[in-house]
Each structure stands twice: as C-alpha cells, then as structure tokens.
Image 1 (cartoon, rainbow, N blue to C red):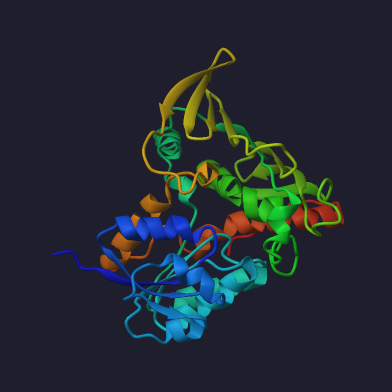
Image 2: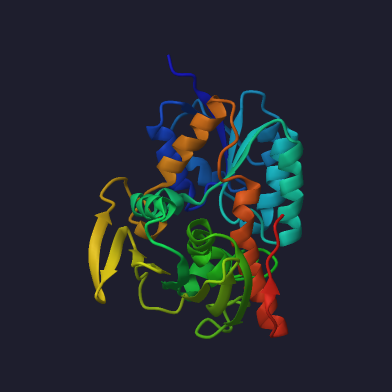
Length: 341
C-alpha cells in the first residue's frame, strides 16, 4: 500500500491549478487542508473533507498537514516558507524562492537548520527536451560551451496587473518581466551551462508605463565562470506568448530549446531532435510547460524516501541572483558579480 503524504496548500491563485492537478493525479499525496485570505478562492475545492483556513498560521499548526505547497505572491514566499520549516513541515515553494536576496539567504539558513525539506518549483528542468539536452551536454560530446542566448517575448496587458494589485510593484512582486515571466529560462541558463560569474544589463518600463513600476523590457549580457558569453532579452510587450528560445553554442554543435522542442542546428538549419508530447497543460497555460506534475512527483518521492530534493534553496538561488543582478546593474551601469550562497 502506498504511503500518502498529507498535503496543505497556501494560496489558491492561478498557479494552484497546476499543483491541484498534480496532487489529484499522484497516488502518494492526499490534499488535507487549503488556505487563502479570500474564502471564495477555496470554492475550487469540492472535497468537503478538506479543511479550509484563511490564516496560514492555522494551517501550519494543523498536525495532520505534513507538507505544504506555498503559492502566494512573491513577497510572502520566504517568510511563509521559514514559518513552515519552523513548524516542521516539508515545503514545496513556487518560484521565485523570495523577492529579495536577503530573504533568500535567510531561507537558505532556515532550510539548512530544518529537519524537514524545502523544494523550489523550476518545472522546466524536467521537460523532456531539457532533460535530453542536459544528457547530451553531460556526455561531453558537445565540447566546450562558447555562448548562450535566451529570448522571452510574452504578452501581459494592463488587466493582468490591475486584476492582481500585488503584481507590478517592486515591494510585492520584486520585479517584472525578469522575476516573473523569465526566471524559469534564466534558471536553465545556469542549470545547463554552469555557474554564471557576472552580468550587465538594463531594464525599462515602456508600454506599461503608468500601469506598473517594474520593468516590462530587459536586456543583458553575461559571462559564465568558464568564460562563455551570453545574452538575454525579455519582454512582456509582445502581442502573444511566443515560444521561449534558449540557444547554446558549443565547440562541436549548437542546440536550441524552443517551447517543448529540442533542435540541433545543422548548416544553419534547425533539425528536430526531440519533441515533448507528454504531460498536460493546465487551463490552456502552455507557457507553464507540462512538468509541474513531474517535478512534484519527484519531490514527493524524495520526501517519502527521507531525502533532500535536488532543487533546494541553494540550487534555486542563482536564478534569483541573476535577476537581481540585472536590476542592480541597470541602476549602477556596472557589472554585477554573482556569488555562491
């Protein structure tokens, strides 16, 4: 008989649908309690046996809850996760791990001291196309990394921000196009290419000026510790959510991740290597990818096996620091040097 983890969920906004779908599909999880400051948000939970709270501290005090999914606005992530660890709960935390680097470092310290586990959602590491590219890179057949580029062009109209007032604010969202829409791709840059040493970039607020105070456009150059160079362009001013492009140029070949596909560039022409036909998008949100369930399943298995999950607080930190480094560089006009927490 499968041992089930008794799960609580804090925050029932849009991304909760992907988590609820995963919990419903995975036999090793049992949704036990949910929490949202808006009682109406909990109407999506049809099981009357699931306990409902409007104060997350009450959920953390519930002895029936072993693990919590924290899916709240960015500025609440770190403290809620620290409180959950202090309450001896396992934690699954949506990206970003925090909205500020100081809070992220506090979270790392708390996770180091906790007797439970902290896992961060970067589900695109588990896309089949990403896994195949990681396997190829690790095989050594590509040769030395020369450079990388990431292009993220999505559409976020004013209504996206006015419907959720915490978005678009430095205090509550912690940034814009980079920390929210692009951080998954920035995570892949270091996950696939190795540590990033420094970054120099610029942000601006263009089409959404007057609606948000954070950036809707950003560009940056960066350098890996191995000496490879890279460029980043991110925008939420496009007319649609275009497929994300991540290109990695090696001595022997060039690969591109584009949406759910992996291509190898042969004589300048993309040649399909793999297309991820598995998984399910949630409510048509294809830009989330299909791998929330894959990652959450792996996290549950790690918890049941008494192990730490591979994307812990330290593993999630470089993507946040890359985002914050671009913000700092835009202010100073100088290179920002990344650190190891």
